[in-house]
Amino acid sequence: MKYFVKSFVVTFFLLICTHTFAEQKIVVLDLTYVLNNSKAGKDAQEFLKKTFKENAKKYSDIEEALKKEERDLLAKKATFNKEEYTEKMNSLRKRSIDYQSQRRTAIDKITTQRAKARETLLTRLDPIIKVYIKENNISLVADRKFILGGAPEYDITKIIVEKLNKELPSLNLK
Image (cartoon, rainbow, N blue to C red; front, side):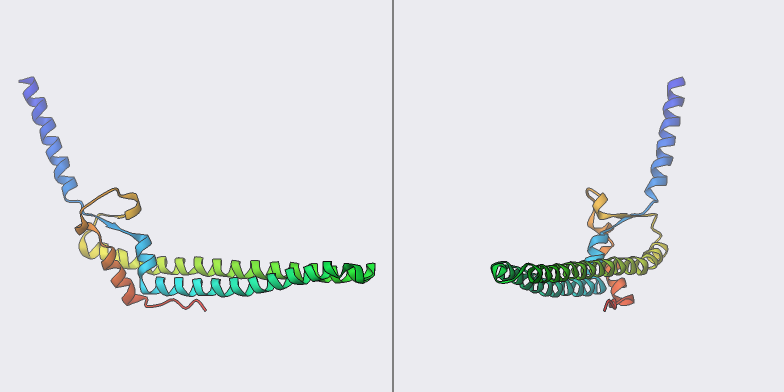
């Protein structure tokens, strides 16, 4: 009789816990997909890639011109007196330092724009997710990268992307 009561209590407790957890609704959201495939996210990525490529081309041309000028200066070293050569070399070094500074500034600007775009997307995404959670009585939203598997009907990524596209069609990064 003692074991019967214990097994009954344990079984009853397990049923109660199982029933409580069964009412919880857990869904999955692929945040990386949302950021990369929403209209605003795609536009921001294209703009940043285009800007990066333009800067890379521009600074590559400047770097090549500086290297060519350095080679020419070294080749003509014998024709200059010491003061002229030192003056021209110092001028070349100064332009090289300016080039590196401009290049670093351009890269920092792109990095800042990227971080700002991501922050804006996440800021606008948060209320959309909160409204969706409230409307659909969801207990937990988990990021896809932390989930090993699950049924596809619990993935709300495409729904959230559609809602984000309606609310935020583009970012103005100019």
